[in-house]
Every structure is written in C-alpha cells, then in structure tokens.
Image 1 (cartoon, protein in one colour):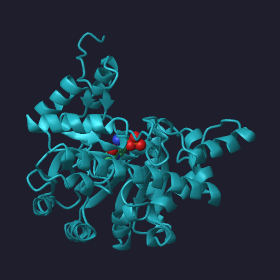
Image 2 (tube, rainbow, N blue to C red; image 1 turned 90 degrees about the vertical axis):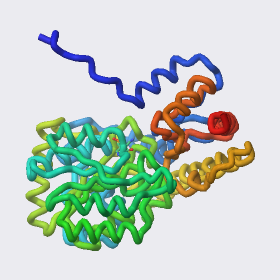
Image 3 (tube, helix red, strand yellow; image 1 turned 45 degrees about the vertical axis):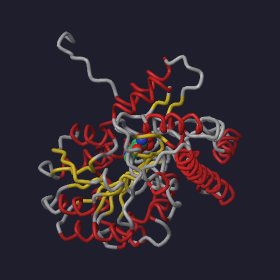
Length: 398
Ligand code: PMP
C-alpha cells in the first residue's frame, strides 16, 4: 500500500536541531530554532504561568471537551490582547474568534476558511517569510506568490518594490503580513509604511492576513499590535492569527487564536459558524490546559502585571544581547556597518551571512544558524555571546 511513498524532505530547521544534538563539542551554540532562552540558556517557565498552574491545581477540574471554538474566557482575553481596549470591531461584535492550536493552527484554519470562500485567490507572502507559510497556504489549495521585502544591500526593507508587487495583486487576493518582529529578517515596517500598505490594501480590495506570533517581543504589547489596530481603525475586513507560544513561553501548549474581522455582527456570526466547521472537521476541539493557564493570567490583575513584567524582561534581554553582539563584533574589528543588528526587532537577526559562511560557523565553530543567514538572537546569553561574536567575526574577516 505504501510502496509508492517517497521520503519527504527534512524540515530544514528541525533538521538543524538534530545536527546540533549530534555535535559533541561542549561549547556548541544553537541559534537555529526560534525559541527564547534566558540568561542561563534555559527555556523559561514564567513565574506568572507557574502561579496560574498552582491555582488551577488547587481546584482540580475534570477534563471534558471544550466547545469547538475553545475556552470562552481564553478567547475573550485573546481578543482583548490582540485588538486592545479601543477596538471598534470588538465594540461592534464583528470579530469571529476561536481558540487555535498555536499560531500555526490559526493560520491553517484561516487558510482553509479563505480557500473555501475564494479558491482562485492568490496568497502573497513576503520574500523571505517564515518557512512554513508557503507550504501551509499551498497545502490549503492556494497559489502562493511572494512580494518583495528584504533589501540585502540596504540592510532593510525594499519598500518601493513591496508596494509595486502588491500593486499587481488582484482583488480578493490574500496578503500575509507579519504584524511585528518579522521572521526571518527582523525588519519591521514603520507606522508610516503600514499606513501606506493599508491604503493600498484597501484601494485594491485585498484581504490582509496578519500573522502575529511575537506580540510583546518588539516594542511592547500595544506598540507591536499597531498594524492590527490600524486595520481595525480603517474598518477593513481582515484575518489575524495570534500566538502566545513565545510571549508566555508555552510553546508546547499550542496556545493561539484566530480572529476574522467582519463588516457587522451578523456577518461575523456566519463566519464563526464556518471556521467552527473547519475546526470540527480537522481536530474537533482544542486542548484545555494552556488556554486555562493563559486565561487565568490575563484575567487576574496581579498575575497579568507579573506576566507583563516577565515579557518585558525577555524583550529587554534580547535588546541587550543585540547591543552586546554589535559591540563585540565592532571590538573584534569588523568594519562593515552593523547597526542593522540593533535596528531589527524580535527573536531573529538576518545577518547577511551567506550559506557558505553559515556552514563555516557550524563546522568550524559549532555555532548553528539557518543557511539563510538567520540567527536567533533570543538564544544569546553572556556565556555564549563572546564565542558567537568571535566566530561571526572570524567568518566575516577570512
Ligand atoms: N508565524 C510565525 C511568523 C512564526 O515565526 C511562528 C513560530 N515560529 C508561527 C507563526 C507559529 O507559531 P506557533 O508555534 O504558535 O504555532
């Protein structure tokens, strides 16, 4: 039966992890996978999360099925987190939302829903984008094209080319945009650039699909949601996939949410019925634990304040590591302009290193990054930073 099955290519980033694990050097450094580790190099278990779990454990609850659209208190808290307290769409009850299996699950349910609605639409993703975007939207049945994003020469965003590419999209096409902390480049649009993009999306009748996987890792919870809230203020119909994987350090709990902003409450209720059908026929209903933890933290003033402080701690530490890497490279005599390291935001730095240079980092120095030049700066700490800086400097200089 399965004789004709071919071997699927290895996931490039998870494959890198396997290679890293097999490396016997004691001072190896993994900057491949997108996971935040703390000053000690450990995946954090946030104190706010532990406190919420202790509370939940103190009054153990049976584990029945959640509704198809998830735990209601979690979904309401996620809506508030994404759209803020001033949201016109939330006030008018025109957001159809459900608990999703991480940001990826939200993207998948959103993609399947949009494809049923408009199978002829093209989905536009940034060049480059998170490596799962193309496959996810292709598997949902869409034709996927890219719009210009990364400007290697200018160490930033090729903004005019981006506008020109989106200017070629046809009405109804879906445009996937990273709300903040662009993965993999780390370069985000300015507020003025967002306004120009939104004007173009509106003028051309395009459907924005905001992917917000790093809210709170750039400038702050509200600042990072600028684009989502600007789309809301513009009165547009759009989709948001949101994830708490990073902001709560709850990667394995699959805490995400999907939001479809509709034109009125009645339309939103029809949309909700459809995304529930997608959820029902894909995984039936989401898991309980992560949603309860997040809802407990967000629903309690003291725990929420503690979480916001812990999140700010992660954000500030990444900024310090960026500054430290830049300083160490400058001190090592690297001549090229390095200010991009601190202009970029979020977990990743697109270093501009070639695939050959990234391979040298791995084989000669045990420093693991992605061949695209992407380094996870959220995995730097004062222990491994000198070694990483020395390795990058050596590769750049010889
Ligand atoms: N979108 C982007 C841009 C991401 O970087 C990631 C996670 N690496 C996701 C979505 C998926 O998030 P989750 O792990 O919550 O599924």
